[in-house]
Length: 176
Image (tube, rainbow, N blue to C red):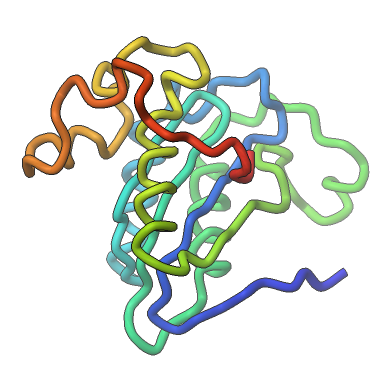
């Protein structure tokens, strides 16, 4: 089945990417591998990471692609496959995945959303930065180490206590 994905060259996209087994903690357990893989993919296939949060079993990111480029699917394929290759083979692999020579670490699909305007962008950035609080990993967004909120605070865009007073307007209609 071919999925319909809205593509826009040079577009800005929100993504949710999940592990196949949502009980695993591979993304934070192997954060250095994930970061290294993302860095290498960005070197060969550039894109800008506007915002990102990496949780144990899934991640959310906003990427802006270069002008004239709409191939985020290839970038995710490279990130997911290169990350998987560097992990020891210990996961259950069902017959369907075996037949396709897949590891079974990631969900096959991911959620993507083309950012439409500044309001849409701001809502998704807030959602990303608030996600560790939403999932109960921390009470203050800035306490979560695997999040771009630290860059936003360093640049003076957000305060280090952002989101602590629950005044963040988080719409729960994002892909997760």
